[in-house]
Image 1: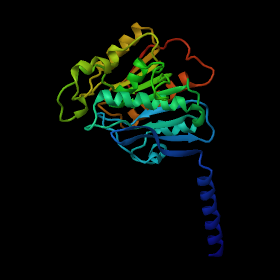
Image 2: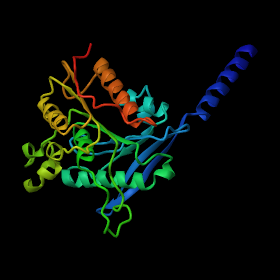
Image 3: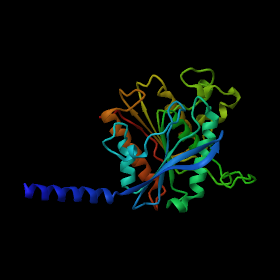
Image 4: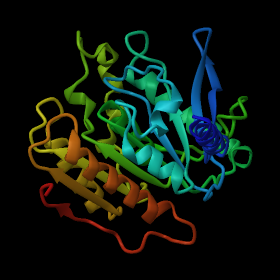
Length: 301
């Protein structure tokens, strides 16, 4: 019994040591702006050994944006978790989990303005976060994919005459990964019980449609879409892929056969690997990503 107690005590010390030497630190609820009397926030998951690059995750589904404990994003056992978040952090990427003004209180154009501000704030404070302002990628799924594409296709160098120092900073990003994104909001705008954020002035729809914003200086973009998606049809990714190709923007599309508006199991593993590989290609130090990579991958095997 004495030997068992001693062994158990040693085990507990080892576990405590591993936890004490966790490979990252979390800074929750960093305020990047204020709106309607409330703070707009993101969480930062910062590896102890940073590689200088960052990935910004759009916490958005249907343009609803809510809070989840940031620990969930790096817990491989969490039911919510995506494998790529922990892998990115383990590879040295600093992860930002950005929340925007959520439906039903706020609409799509307002969400777009919020995430642009979040990127401006991150770039302005790049030194504080230990990252390179020119090595920031962005990712998201569905509405989050739409917001990611908006950053990839319609960012700017800042508003020079603004009185707000954050607004003076560029919101450009260096790489995009978008899962099953809507790309032309002219087809979606209007009254919607399911997606109240789409109830805004139709005259603004073009300005928040990434398909209509594509130009040759856009960020390298990876699209991942299921061919059985009944909510956001596959042709959304196909159309923006064609536009990116025409503009000679580095781009790639992966079609996952049998996948709907989510990627369960092995499909999710494949999507996660593609995301990590894309950011490794375009955000790694001392690389320009090589030649434009335009391909349409085969079904998941």
